[in-house]
Image 1 (tube, rainbow over the protein chains, first blue to last red):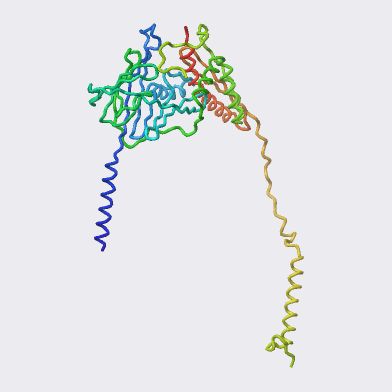
Image 2: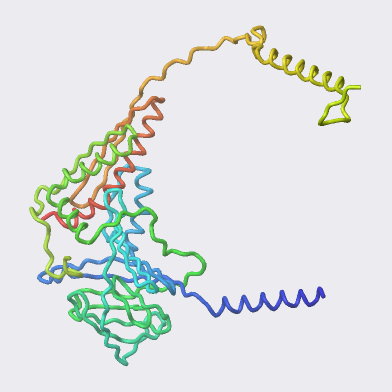
Length: 272
Length: 118
């Protein structure tokens, strides 16, 4: 009798392990070299930033690798000098859950973590037969118009994840490279890493929901009166915390700065 | 011989004794209930000498932190006053200044990008 019980236990364990193997999850990290000519009248000035995409079979997170590195350096600087050197890069993180069909932007803003729900636009990709190898993966070419630019993307059907750099998505494989036909915007492949075990795609817990219109208004208020806007937010936070702390700050901007916000003639996406 | 009508087996004399015993117990109980619970002699306890705790003075601490970028910078000064040691006030001010400076990073970066140096 005991032998039969042991046999049953062995069979159930084996069947469970084989089930978990068939439901294999893909996890990985891709680093892209992002380049952007923001002003087409000055094609010599190219904005560059390293970006990274964490992905799994269900979701992805796209964020700046440069900011990730500069934040680590800043922590050490802060302890030594008491000063933070502001990074040059994108603070926005894009979380995309392809199973739920939801995409969010997470933006730090004066102590708050803003959560903006993005509208997922269906991109009408035209997939062609052209192929090329990127990072040892066989990739296929696709072309589509998205947010004012005509993009060429190279996706990898072997990595069956409908994600990619920035908001480019919806292909039957991970996008490893993309650029606009005018070569003013580019996401070129830098590296691919398989990840096992750890989950890097975790949405922050305490967020403040705002619409993209509200966020545009917040940015406008800051640009109109930087000192006034920051001091109202900081002093409001002091009063709300009831810690007995009183903060004052001195903001210094360039004396010869532009009076109005710099308008770029080739934005990544049109202002909403 | 006297017998109770309802309980013919009970002797009436026995019943009288029972009633007397019950009333005695009730009276004893009532008298004891009126007595004060505690004796004054037991209440007084020896009081040990205690030192008077001096009132803590308010101390303040100030700390400064800064955020720097190519074109924009911000210096944050935080003062914390508390009913605590001076070193504690300074530590709290330092933590608060660091926290506020961290909050400013994203907007300094934004300003640097949107309103750059010419």
